[in-house]
Amino acid sequence: MLPSVPRQYSDYLAAHGVFEGFTADGTRPGYVALWPLDEIRGNNVDVEIEVYAPGFLAFGGDGGGELLAFDHAGAVFMLPMIGMAPDCAIRIADCFSDLAALFEI
Image 1 (tube, rainbow, N blue to C red):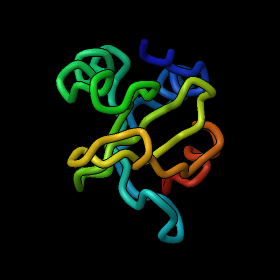
Image 2: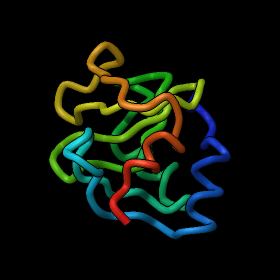
Image 3: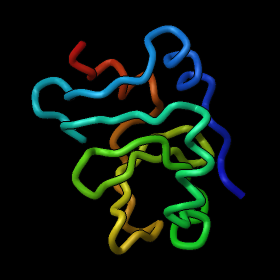
């Protein structure tokens, strides 16, 4: 079962729209391309995240083969599209708000 989209994410999109750009000071992931809410489920089906990385919900990418994904607790991870597996996930933020604070706006 896919995790739910955290409220922080939907609130951010409602207030600011879909962000595409860089994170400050070279922090991970570097480049961010968020997905609109209505594309999240379909994109997760397309990349077969429930098959290869159960327990994660992708919500964007870094433009270079890594997905941005939430776990059930709402923490943010980078997950490789090639070799996708839960043990390959790298935690980059405790929550979406922590990640969004790094966006260069």
